[in-house]
Length: 143
Image 1 (cartoon, helix red, strand yellow):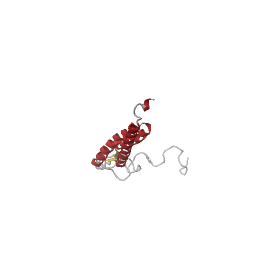
Image 2 (cartoon, one colour; image 1 turned 45 degrees about the horizontal axis):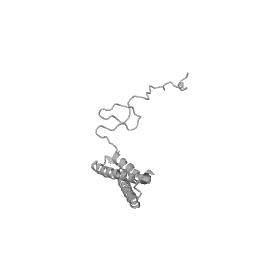
Image 3 (cartoon, one colour; image 1 turned 120 degrees about the horizontal axis):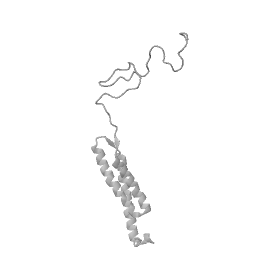
Image 4 (cartoon, helix red, strand yellow; image 1 turned 180 degrees about the vertical axis):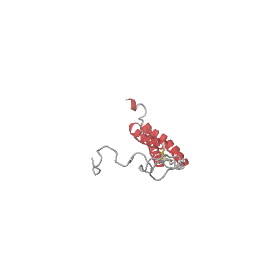
């Protein structure tokens, strides 16, 4: 092999180049190992950790139970009262989100849970009043 020919496929290039180590890059932070000069930004220096906001589980529960309250009216009028759980969870979630100082999100879900839960309660009570007014509650569901 002459000096003008490239090395065979798979052999390391001449000059002692090490693609997985070596020195280079933009320096090191205190306590950080040298990862070579190729690899993006690397981890932030100590003390600069950022935690993205977390979704509130209560806000999600408020929306789910609020929707179940509306759907429950279609199945059985009294299931609309499940919306009460949506209103309670939504109120607790909004309080939790406001007290978290930006660490939790989902205020829109909590508000939607309060609204859908309220609609479910109104429709559930309306169907109960309608059933009592028409006299259908005296065993109509058991025939």
